[in-house]
Image (tube, rainbow, N blue to C red; front, side):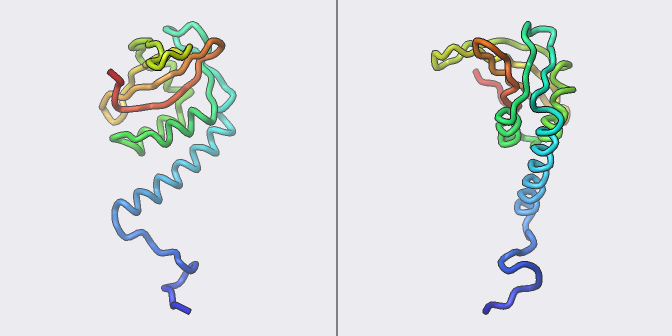
Length: 139
């Protein structure tokens, strides 16, 4: 048997900055998902520019946590507090779905680490859902 340097066989400490960030992100995402299940999912909030309540689902939370972003750690903390942040965000526009489905997307603007980021809400015929947070706006 191969000798390991202590701990569980096959596990090792992350050596590079990228490996350490990966571990931090994995742990942060898990904590935020657990928090969201208990305190955010199933809730709804209002935004002055949108006539329907905005609902939160695990699908939207997971999508937002997996979305790439220039300031990913800060963005994930915004996801954790999305029910408090979303009502204060600045409304930008509403677009119809580019694929012809009966969907609308609402875009709200906010700052993450002093740079513009965008909250995307998805509306079907019945409800409006939090969809994701991104640092790039679709043209």
